[in-house]
Image 1 (tube, one colour):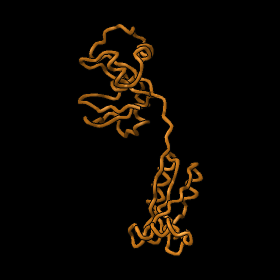
Image 2 (image 1 turned 90 degrees about the vertical axis):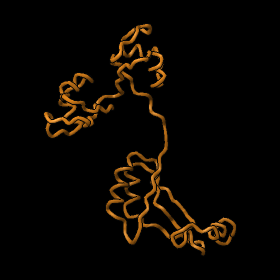
Image 3 (image 1 turned 90 degrees about the horizontal axis):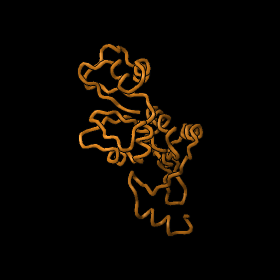
Image 4 (image 1 turned 180 degrees about the vertical axis):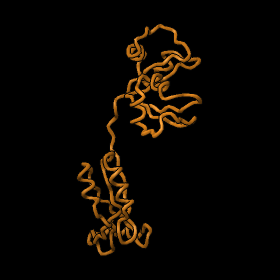
Length: 193
């Protein structure tokens, strides 16, 4: 994906030709209501995999390869140019997408009051496809060793539908603050554990 900032007097036809895509693809991707009324400064998402880069003064194939963490040979090959070819300012290079790195992501949801707000649940639904863990905040440890459970509502179903691990967060909160004393009791007293 690439973002293009509309300049004065640019049209969708010009932008589509610049990036090697179609006007219809730009209209659909950006849900543009009036394609003939672009505004300078407006951003347009270009529906491509990878990016384009326009050669700037002082650039070399090597410096561009370093900027995008790609080998000089791969950059030359995908752009069908010689590795020794001098680059002209303004020349368009295609930068292929880099492999995705595996990562794990967590999001906390913290219901407040006596019910889960529709906005919080909606936010959890929107974020869940990108998460590894969904963590309702929090199961509060009590001085008698029991737990006060947070409002869960549909969070287990949201986690399950998105293959998230529903994470149990246990805290030493009392009176809307963390309690060192409660933490010490829970960690050191076998009876309460």
